[in-house]
Image 1 (cartoon, rainbow, N blue to C red):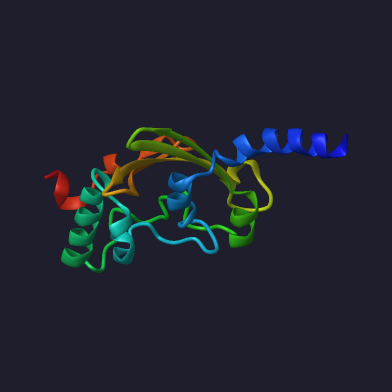
Image 2 (cartoon, rainbow, N blue to C red):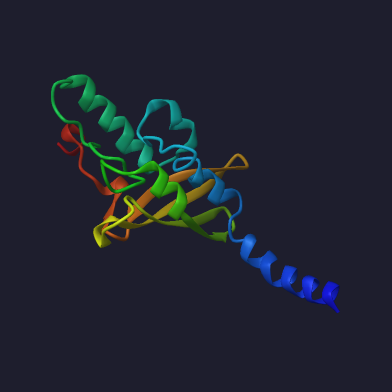
Length: 157
């Protein structure tokens, strides 16, 4: 009887595990083992439009006025500047919804061990480009903003 119970338990657990697929892996990269700054040029190949347009405008603003704060002055994937890596890694939960060549991955986590204001919920929009999941946008459900909609210096003039 015990092998039967194990089989039932596994059949219930497997669908839940399937929620974190390839699209989620593309998002998880930016959180663990360490948080990575999405706007860093070395990660551009992981993104696609419309958010790449903001990154280009941010690069231009930084180049034109290097002594001023650029448009992306926080970590978009965290909706914050400050965080505790151990807490982010420990509390990170990803939920994936795939619809053909598009997907949404919701990342829920805490920035710090304590405080209700440290809870974050981020929705990452992805598109499959040449067989790979690329990030098209990031939206903060916590603070109600969308990365590609942020204004950036001369790009809005």
